[in-house]
Length: 232
Image 1: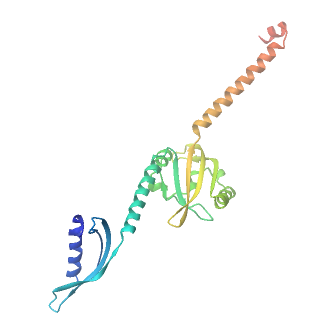
Image 2 (image 1 turned 180 degrees about the vertical axis):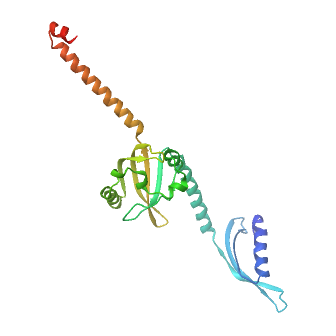
Image 3 (image 1 turned 30 degrees about the vertical axis):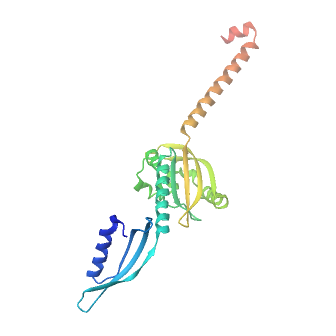
């Protein structure tokens, strides 16, 4: 009833345990009488006679199908999450939650690596404070952010980040408290505001020019011909 693909593995594990006179522990697949595929855990030891010849295996077998299916679903979910994590066109950072101080990053996505210029290994040695301008990451600001996260579970704010090359990027950070394996982490999605800031600056400049033109036009309209001649 052992699955064909697992037979050699099972035979090898049992044989090795017998030769070394040690207990073996293995997980493998079986095919039940009705054709269903199941996972089992087996632990045992080979009992031998006085001449060191195998007599039988003493041990037990337990059905672990539900556990293995749950593990497989978790792996599939993690793979889907990682694909989505790295597919996002926004920089994403994950670091442990602590009541005081921001901790080192434990995960970043591909966009973060490309945008900030650090390798993953370099990121794992950094904390959020290393990406911020010093005057914008004061203790009072950091404490306020942590308090909002603790009380509401999420926080959103605008700030500036600095890349490895020293380039300043205006960003908006959407941070959330998440729980993984009973531990709390901060997951931050960071949106680059550079294009918006440029557009805002252009709009502001255009508005200032328009206001200036309106003022000049008003001056002309409210002036006599002689005044206009003098302005010209």
